[in-house]
Length: 336
Image (tube, rainbow, N blue to C red; front, side):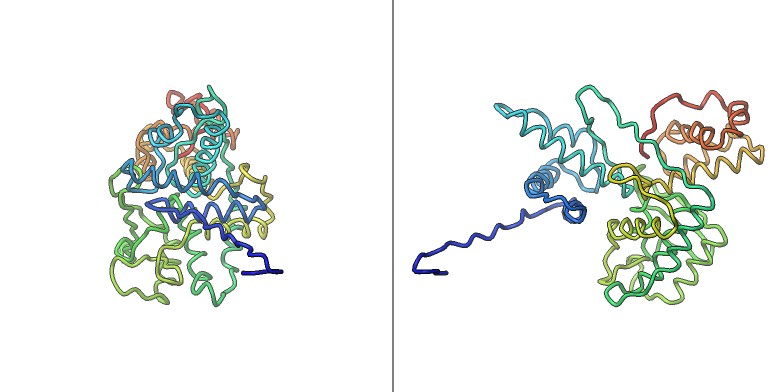
């Protein structure tokens, strides 16, 4: 266009295009950071490069492995330290975001020499979980979010009642939900093996009530479809979760401090163990059951919940140690 006889070139910066398996979650992540007030101008370029790199690396699921993260952030010839630091931070922040949504993501060390993040999960009390679910039940219907007021209360009941990762719940297809027998089929996930998850009577009843007012065209339709019939974005559930926390009177510690949506899964495991210990169950026999139920690749991932249970419920410490002291690992809290 021309202003005052001078030709002014208007430049429209084209947003970097996210491609491959991480495209949707990477775009959601950028939107999330900007919603918190960050400008986040240079980072999308780094994320777009990471998406292309992951595609060439052969990544075919939303999962950041250690080999992928380290390959992308490996030192490059004649690269400035600041440039590599930017890549490290960008990938680490994206991995933290994916982890908060329940995806499997290796968290790069924040500082050189640090092996693992020591994030301590937030364990909700029974009353707090009731308050969160009550808040979900009070979700108001919205024209732009058709049926979300019906699906979200059920999603949160499954998260807490079954201890699933949020990604596992949202990926459920109509064929995966057997309402006659009250069984969910979780396909693949971390272990590359399907697993069957029984529903409690109350969660099954919630699913049946939801299904009576929902229609599916084919078996592979998502059980909890978004308004456009695609999979609901984990970011949508996370945003609602933050609202429910506020409504339930549970304070949030701010960015990176939780409670996180994934902490509902940790809470499920601790509450199950609390119940078993109180009932005098043989934890040596029960731990493999809980491990398989939660889809852990090794029992050590499940055993750490024993220590966490003892920390949250100190009155059970002696019982926990008496039953299975040998499986309580003295390790940092990890993400699973």
